[in-house]
Image 1 (tube, rainbow, N blue to C red):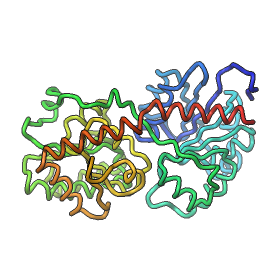
Image 2 (image 1 turned 45 degrees about the vertical axis):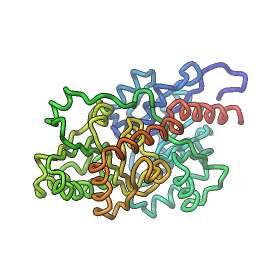
Image 3 (image 1 turned 60 degrees about the vertical axis):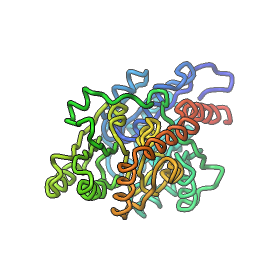
Image 4 (image 1 turned 120 degrees about the vertical axis):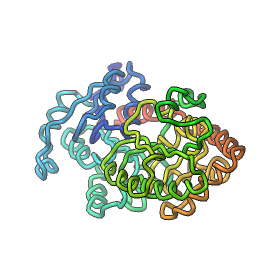
Length: 376
């Protein structure tokens, strides 16, 4: 363990399920890319799979390891292979992320290493047995980070964690990179988008929590008023097949594209006239922040951090994730009134630049890491 006088880098072990493309995984990768690497040495341990972001993390200087498969049941009591790994890496802090809190708490207890846990958002629906398990192991965790004030309120209410244990560090993005750009003619040719076509889009994992069936049903209604409109959904996940079935049965194949995983997100966002996020649950959505930073007007579900980010009536609209008609009305309003949409987009960028810059987020985590070491 480091002493207060030590000038050696602080060894941080990030414990995550994977580095697949997703909000939490992207945050870990960006934290690695921007952190002061003279002060911190970073290791990422993936419990389930590496994922495409692992290469980016390694290019930024982190070490990424796929953990040995853990024995179900026994590993909840004694995760031996992980203990040996973290001992070998001489970890000073374990920083766990959503889904890994209980495992990290066991490691922290056995090894007497402080644990920080970042909760990026709760699963939908939140399972009772998981709540009880995390409530128990949360007692061992030194600090729990919520990515939005509303998520902090939820964690304190449901898990009954004390106020001094839970703090808020809101997600941040690179607002210099995610900035308005001219529409890419090359990308428009690739996606067969005409200059006069309206484009509705979303970026996110194809999973239940993202509520993409609602967006598809809303888009079908929008086509009756905007028959040349296109829908782009960027991301991959377990719901791809069911979404493809909805697209085919609804006759949307010509107008809707599931683009899979892409790394030209900024250019895709800048093609969109309206960005839509209909999720059942959100913490602080990186894709929402990126769209707003690119000056896109947004329509989002009134859940979680969306309610804090989107100033309804100024930079976008909020709607219930149950209400298809509300999404249809909000999207059509922005498509029908381009001057309003432009004004909303400008306001959206102002909000993100002022409050959600990546540098501020990284500095908060660096400060927290130092507190964990020097307060011991």
